[in-house]
Amino acid sequence: MTGSGPVVGGGLPSGGGPIIGAGVIVPTTDGRVLIGRRTTAGEPPTWSLPGGKVDGTGESFEEAAARELAEETGIVLPAAAMRVLAVLLDHELGRPRLTAAVLAPPSDAPAFVTEPHSCAGWERFPVDALPAPMFHPSGLVLARWLPDYPGPAGAHVYPLV
Image 1 (tube, rainbow, N blue to C red):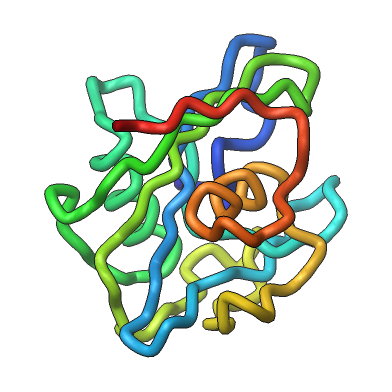
Image 2 (spheres, rainbow, N blue to C red; image 1 turned 60 degrees about the vertical axis):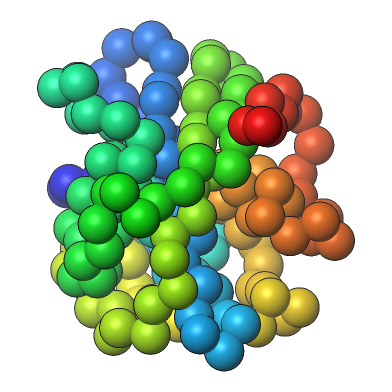
């Protein structure tokens, strides 16, 4: 999310409307996943997938995922290679937040901190040793991808068939 760091599904935009975003799962060729140290001002530090809000320009979830990944990490992957696994609806912020769980193709490209005001670094973790605490929407997204991941409760899940 330009200017706001790795915020899957978005942080609190001005106004009280719904938040629409994408969380990007970037697996590696050896089975790890890219996770960032989220350090957004005014919020407790958490771990997060790359991602952020969908632009109001007609952007798709896949396009938002590719754009946010490039903006936040410098990793460029085509939107056409992104796959939406599910759409998740939560109200953790007191208003609707719709997050697409988007799976990117495997990538071992280096990830750079491009938004140091909101991300302290990117690391790749084995899927059976993910860090905590996890940013709420990232936990929801990871639970759609990893059947044994204990993601947060309280979301409506709309898997794609």
